[in-house]
Length: 197
Image (cartoon, rainbow, N blue to C red; front, side, top):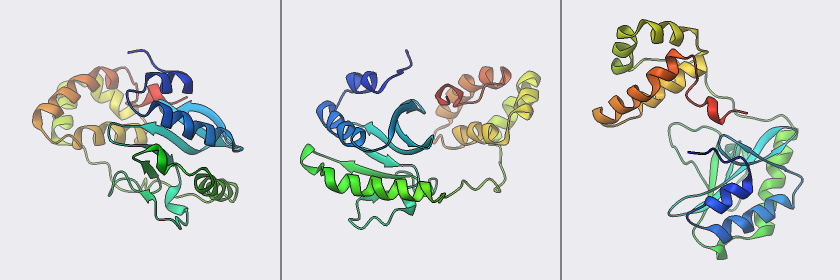
């Protein structure tokens, strides 16, 4: 699958919410934020730091704030998309174009920019131990090259692989994921390296 390189490509390829994504993009472009593509999706930065992202899904479209938990959220519109996992990121979901209020969105963006300029951020907790799931531990024990390469990866990249296996609910899914990642680990490639720029 071809990696999408521009925001235009992302919006053109969107299966849902095409005109709504264009409208949100226009609002984001009317601010001082700089449009780019990071993590495989449209992002808007200030001082080279991500402030806001743009995305469309089957049942909703929206924007996400990288440090959204710091926002005052006076209109109570932000949600944590991954309770228990995401500390800082918050989404603003829309179900129709009628819900898009430019002035309201710009007020949230203005606050997010101010917080970023003040250096306020919620940092990821890197202190918790990285516990390897039994399936990954067994697979690494059976593949010496992958084991050695895994030990050479940064703690963050190790955690990405660990979480990727641990988050799978079914054994079949864990097995498929292991088959996918073992060659990547052996090649010293991080799980999300393709999305980093």
